[in-house]
Length: 272
Image 1: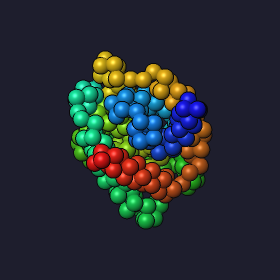
Image 2: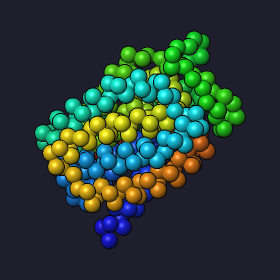
Image 3: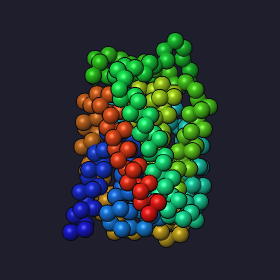
Image 4: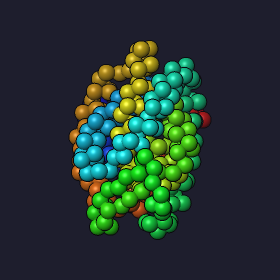
């Protein structure tokens, strides 16, 4: 029965992760901790492994449709991978309740940002087109029926926050997408679909780096991880097929709702 439940959770998480660019770790980790009584460190390891699965499942589709900004992702990921490995080392030696509280606080703050954005018009975030840089790109938006051009801005800030996302990924098992998507969308002014797709591309590398210390220290459950990975693979493929049809505003609302629910649950778990 447990195996079936894990498959279902993995499948649903895969769909959400593919749609929101968060890899699913921010969903899987608290579910394993709160409902399956998996120790936090083992849950983090499982979350990281499922993130890799989500990324590899959806990235080819997103690249083919032009949603992934490859140059920008490589620029950000250089620092993020190193920070993820360091975060994994530190996370292995951090008390579980501190990880849980940190997890909840980070997600709740990000959710508040998206609650604010959700009440704005769908085109409230303007994309920089007055000048170009090496990361400028475009994609065809079926919702608007036009080619959307954009140029990432505030590159030093985004690079710094992405490094923090890598650290959080390694220590909390969240892949970093819950931090990377908002900073790319709200700070660097990338369209939400590009932010999500580019995040999905990056989180696979970030999670792989962050999972290494957990494997070294033997804090992983192969049965749990493999079961959830199977569910995630099928769910993420379904989510990827629906991604282009979902409106930008709906994506922001979904992002905020998922993060808020998880944040409250994990914070409560940490203070018990």
